[in-house]
Amino acid sequence: MFPRIDNKESDASVQRGEVLVYNKPPYRRDASELSRQASKYDFTSETSPGIWKVVRKSDRAHFLARDVSSWLLDHGSAAPSHTSLLWLLDNQRMIEPLMAVLNHENLVNFVDWAQLIGWKDSKQPDQVTHFFIYDYCNAGTLENLFQTETRVTPSGNEARYKVPVEHNRFLPESLCWHVVCSILKGLAWLHDGIREDLNPDTKEYEIFDAGLDWQTILHRDIIPANIFFCHPHTMSETYGQCKLGNLSKAFVSGHVNGVLGGRVPPGKGKVLAGQDGFEPLEKLRQKKDMPMYHPPQFDQPYTIISEYRSAGDVLMGMMIKPIMSAMKHMEYIRDRNEKDWNEMFSNANYSADLKDLVWELMSRTELEHQATFDLYLRAKEGFQNFRETDRDGKAMVTIEHVQVEHAEAEAERRANEAELTRRRNEQLDKEDDKIRDEELEAPCPNPTREKLLREIAELIQTTSERHEGRNRQVDESQS
Image 1 (cartoon, rainbow, N blue to C red):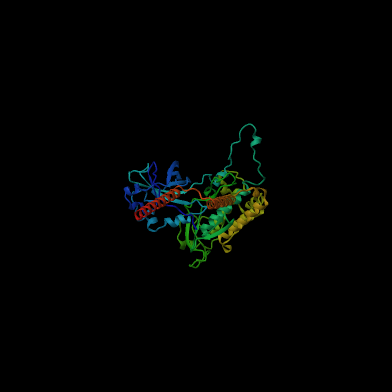
Image 2 (image 1 turned 120 degrees about the vertical axis):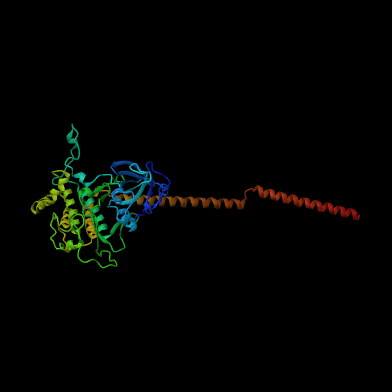
């Protein structure tokens, strides 16, 4: 179900230290053993303190590596204690499930865990520096698009550089659909353990689930700054992948929602968490009947409905043109009273399908809770309708388009190759038949065969001559 995570090690080494992929607890190995471990990544440049761009040597794919040594250990101590996260991750075998969960096309994936010996910041030559390897989203965040001045107009012919802007519309509707479908698809995995993948060969979407009693995970920080973009893989794609990232506030609920129909009965009640940090479940249960105000109150429990409304806020932020800084824009959207919010919403010049989705996200209640995956399918249906009826929608080229085109091109290449092979074999068979026919009519000279025949003929002649001579001698003796 999950893409294979390859932990094979190569024979190369990194200039600044030996890199190894997590396999056994690194603190149980000596330096000589670690130094023999091979490198999978090239560390190319440091984007900010402790964060590096890296390239995987096997396929030249780009990722980000973050130094997490002080986080995994106790305040940067050399050896882990029994309370350190490094010790807990290894002894509880949590790293593999963590990498399996953060392994979705619309999440910033946790790709690998690598350690380096003798890193440039190491205080000791045999000290191990730990790096987590993540997806590299190289096209910025949604928050970047909320800047009030995103381009510099050249002097001179200003009219040439003016971009037509529709009245009461901010970002293109095609981008709004792309972002909200990506967010809901990623949340469907976190909430329900359900994912949808396109099979390019059949052009059909296939639904997979985790195959176990999934415990709902709440993101708790769905804001434009945590929605990342990647550049398109090809020139034809309209937008690159959109990924929900920064799960530093994520909450693993321990609540089985029963969406997958597993062995464990669904948990009673609803998934509850604090707005930030952690609160005892006993305290949260005392607030479970608190109205779901929006914007949320400080002591209001955080639920799946909070996730939906956060996604609705993001979508509204994309529809309303910012009149202040990017950081203040979302606060401006969320803090409007009901009258002002409804007026902004009504005046937004977007399709009825998109506005209906915003309304559904913002007005959903706990009593109307359904699987987030069903909500994603609802958004996907609206997106498909937009692509079939709207001019901009018809012009969109999605990554699914490209995947299907690549699959079709590959299938055509394989078919052409098979046809060429068939024709070549057919021609070879004809040539073999012709050679066999010619050999039957006039066998090709065989030097070895002819030499053997000559030797046999000479032997027969010599034997005959000997018999004739012996017979003459007998006749002469008798006479």
